[in-house]
Amino acid sequence: MMLPEDLMLLFLDEEDGRVLMDSTAIHNALAGAVLLELVKSGRVAFEPDGRKLAVVDPAPLTNAFLQESLTRLNKPMKPQRAVERLRTHVRDNVMAQLEGQGVLSVEKTKMLGIFPTRSYVIQDHQAISEIRDLVGNVALGYSAPDERTGALISLLYAVNALHKVFNGDKREMNARAKEIYAGNWAGIAVKKAMEAVQAAVMATMVASTVAATSVGGGSS
Image 1 (cartoon, rainbow, N blue to C red):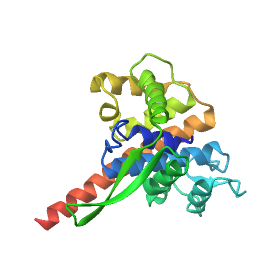
Image 2 (cartoon, rainbow, N blue to C red):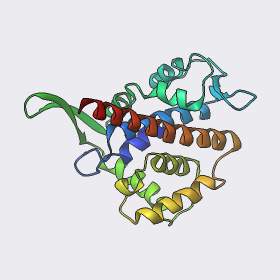
Image 3 (cartoon, rainbow, N blue to C red):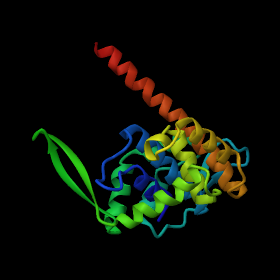
Image 4 (tube, rainbow, N blue to C red):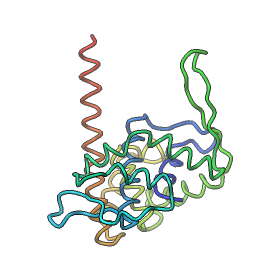
């Protein structure tokens, strides 16, 4: 599985498919994961001055979801802008990937018989258990991080999700995540991208919160 799919599984309760985080956090984290996948694929990289990300290899990707995401980066842009571009429909697209792989099914329902909503039925409990155990052992300090788990924990930390995804002391897990973030678990290019993506996701989270607060304040 790719990083966005792994991350989305961590955002779900492994028993009943309940979503454990709010939509804003999920969309920002997933967009960051997509951006990292594009960097890992060699299609996206920093410009020489290190300020903006740009498409450096336009060769089509075999994964249609990643290819569509790549087309959104139609000019050089700062990581935060790239995350914002990649957020649109990212959760639905990742869920479609997981549904296509038989990991879960998406059911459309109506809340109170009026408001359209979706529920997720887990079909492959082993897939969720495996990724939760893998990442959870690193988050709780039982295992050392690698490129996959280090990236996932850094993204969870960026949206303040570790304590909602895993049972454990929030302060200890966040301290562990900071250590992981500063570690040498990835190559130079990926690590540089991870640092930029984490900062971008955090900045986008702040911007989203400010915007929501402003709207709420204006309506009172």
